[in-house]
Image (cartoon, rainbow, N blue to C red; front, side, top):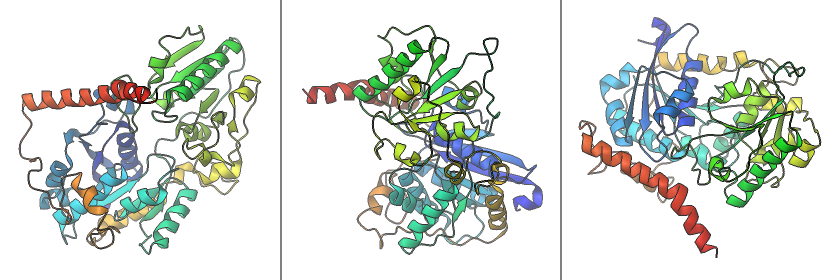
Length: 449
């Protein structure tokens, strides 16, 4: 029965990393009708970035059930008639290739069945690279969510430009914005002025640049002993996130003499922002969370304004500055029109932006209509006809044939992994992470000699 008729929503979320789990689970809650009872089943795609228990706890979302699966196991679980009719919504919180594989796999499993979940996908943050590639890999979902007016316009332009249906593109906002609006500390009796540097796992991607940024942060702490300077870390050593982190900042800081007002912190970004007076980053989505609360926010230019860094996305924002400027007391002033186009700054409609409180209304209405309707088969843009040299490789990585059917030898869903297999999986994942974070950087350095 449709969710609108029962005031409940049964949702499945398939995610492949901690950040995408956070986006998928929170998106599901934002899309639910007001006052609806949400039943959330979580599926974690087994891979190098499968979240650890600590990472899942940090996200703060408690699903009704949670299990780790392969792509084929997930398709077998969701492909049955009972499962297809028991869920209202399926959120694919995956990298683009994973979304495309699941769309083809579900199309094969569901066939022409009209009673099936509404399939939703999107992005976890700023879209600054592989725009066409990522978007076309997501085409075929019933709703492709765009986190801002700017993204919605770009997404539609890409789909229409290749002759694909753009009707699935739906403007929303990042689901994890919110929190207490910024109030500056007023004096010595209050908390100290707090500067937070939000790191990114893969930006920049080399030791020289990461060491430079760390040293500048430490220098800022020494130049301003009255300030508290925090290095906000994404993950602990051995954990993986959406992007591979070969050179964790905490390891770079181990041999450094840190000033007393400098600290390394983990935890939920929203809680860290509660006591932040200046947010500094290269190009992290944390900048949008910070701007939404009207916290002074700086996107660094020290390493240049480059597509490879992602900070080119912030051109026109008024937030671009260097450490030299920050050391000298620079205070950033964000451009209201730019901020409004990014879907941030709660309640600011003066520059043409919609209130965050209503940002999901249109998507919620569309979702309710789709849940109540008989849905057509999933129709991705990429097919063996339109992309015969590209699609089969994407599907094969998830053990699927060109038609979306499981390949011979794919993992069976009806066999629970035994204790030995579970130990082997954990050991293999640990070995992979050790190789990425310790062995690979050494080999690269040796190659540069």
